Image 1 (cartoon, rainbow, N blue to C red):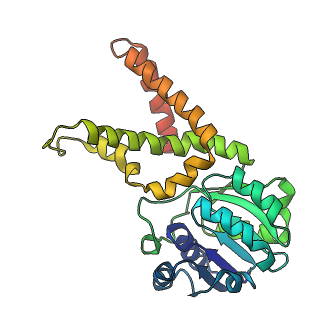
Image 2: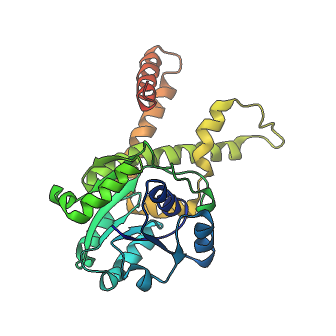
Length: 280
């Protein structure tokens, strides 16, 4: 892998460029994005230069699509005639089924391998990029067939993911979308709902400092942008609806048992999974 093109040089794309550099990649890294995003990514050292899509992918061995999901889908529709034969195209989309289904039909000159780095921040843009963003974090790959991970291009790519410190997990698209509905999408909506409830119900002039760190923890995700989440919610609606139903059912159970000892079991089960998430 000598030439990398990053389409979308925001937080994830720029962090990928920085991570490659820190891991020792000495090839070219070209960005495709808005003029301001390109300038920020160049200033951060994440890319060497910007270029139009056709120019940027012509020599690329790896094309990394790190845009919003709707933009990823649009790029895939136009990408195939521009690719160098044998190039690997991958993405960072937070949902996978629609992206992989489209790529399966649209990309024939190169190989497509769906991906989702489970990393991020509430802040956006290359100015917030971090070479260590993926270190110790799960990076999901969603091949249609395990053999897709054994091509030379895929092996080269996954080797670099190992060098940047990502932990690779392989899932099929539907498994991925079902799991992230529970592990990522419901947490976002729960945080947003809690913050919106506070906005609706706190009396005028209420002192927000009358809150502990728990409220800060619970509302951290509410800082996220709807522009980013709109496409995620639209492309995983079925799984999110089912996951929300389970969460609402659990909240109803808690409400019905506020005065009973049944909540002791829920506290214990919740604490166990929270400890496991933290490696305790």
